[in-house]
Length: 311
Image (cartoon, rainbow, N blue to C red):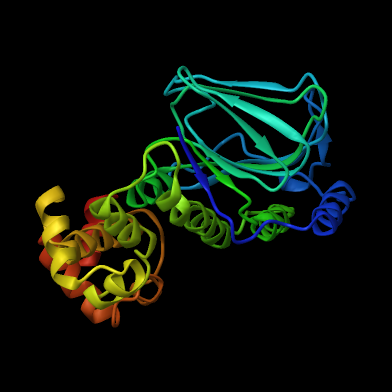
């Protein structure tokens, strides 16, 4: 597990109290018209999916209310519930997370990510049980997204203000019919982007320059990136960037970036009914024609052939 610190957006107590009150006043509905309900852990469930979409789905969304007995175990069963990704934001109070080798505390204003298929136990503090928002996400889109950003472990981020993203997710989950998965996918990307950048400041193992460069590239997969951009962001000369990255990973940074970007584009082409124009815009390709050319060079197939082959 990685633990990271971000000093730039510690929330004021009054803002946190406002958010807590707003969350607790919610009277939303669970998907397909079912009333919001409380489970045995004193959690308000706004949405629950039983028959999930293998490409991407919102499995659970809700709020954990203060409960000194709250305790959750993630197992590592590939067929079990925890073949999913969990994002949580602590609105107030305190809690704890344990892995097989480490334990961590979480407090008001913390956001954390729990990777799938890794064993965790997390629970509320008995004296100051937390109120937290949570979403559970599933699918091959999330697999690709998490891999692209290098999130191989669970991550704790200190004082990263994600309440607006959670608020948007809860609003999107409040539907009677089909979920707006495209918009929810954008929220998932936003959560990962808010978590990943601060990996540069993790305290358990300070990153070296090649990892910093890789982190910058992974973080900006949806953007256009040049050596000049990396140099300005990390204060390293362009020649050092190329040499250090190639020594560590055996490929130039821009080739690594282009490879990951086109892989991500192919995932979207195969698994989701986006138009080429939408994918090109999402990943900052010049246009759909150029995206098609890149896909052809990468796979030996046109986008339509690639999509047809996977049916």
